[in-house]
Length: 264
Image (cartoon, rainbow, N blue to C red; front, side, top):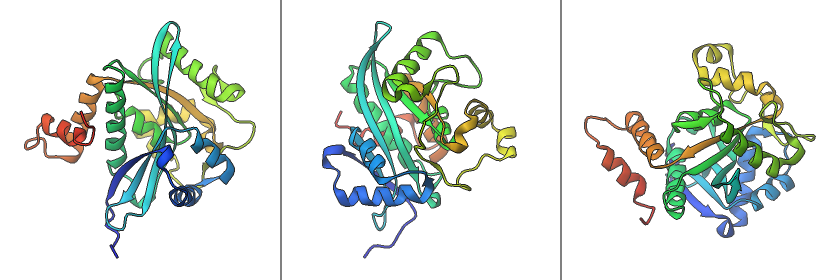
């Protein structure tokens, strides 16, 4: 019997290899943090996905988080779009602040980048919580919407096309948010609340709060970000500063660490 370590490790599983016992554990974790949800809707949403990133305690292998992923291709305004959609994402509060999810998702994006012949991948994210938005804004160079510049016309078109196709009448383009006629789930009261000090200190959190004031009742802010080789280098440089001593670990070593499971 292994003891819990408090450290996360990741495992990315295609949907066809996800077993019922794992789905049960994902649901049990999800309902600890969200309200106004039901098992049937959770499973219906999961069935549409391509893969799941599982976040496991490295000691006892218990599931302490997950993020669902859907991959699809579209042509928008005459340009091909290889989109990666982030669905339900949750991490147990005791494991907040670790980088396992960021690394696993970067690995997934790099694989898609290779499959797309190194043409940019577009990450389509919807966010009802500021921590999810920060995961997006702090790990990409080019993303929208954002506090420091307006969203360009083509990126607005991409957000509109993907959001309207997937969420139909729940998409409100004039506000840039999803507002559902029936509750789709919201964070339980007291989980990652946005207090005044966070809004004052962090421009990204202030932007999220101002542009998705209905997040507290489950409204979702729709976002798009570009992932290419430059974005990968940017992510690696941020990871090096956060996790490693930059005087001892080279950028090439970080790439090797991220790429050792990619098969490329």
